[in-house]
Length: 159
Image (tube, rainbow, N blue to C red; front, side):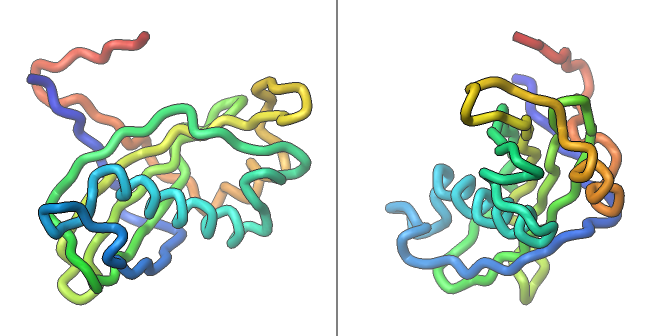
């Protein structure tokens, strides 16, 4: 079975800490797989805020998450502080990929890594739009190499 491989950049320009609460855990007592993306979403909101934007107002347009890929690397537990690092990759005309990694703060144990596809969206017309030029300029310091990499003997399927 083919597995997703996500290559991390050597440098992330953005980082934020998120503490795991009881509500983030599943019946197994560790970070719930569905709630992992909730934590990544919170980090993404903070990323945009660090640039002076909200997800609904990036130079007058919003964003949508178009896809997501992730790899789990280890368990995470109640009370642990996760360091979520983010960088922009694969900038296109209408969006970019945001690669991220999540590590436990005190041990640096890697918990998960992934990438989230972001497209720019006009909520009034309900259409995907071009990435605002001013936002593209601000991303210059957050840019990193491509995050997706296929493992041996794997083919990329685009649907």
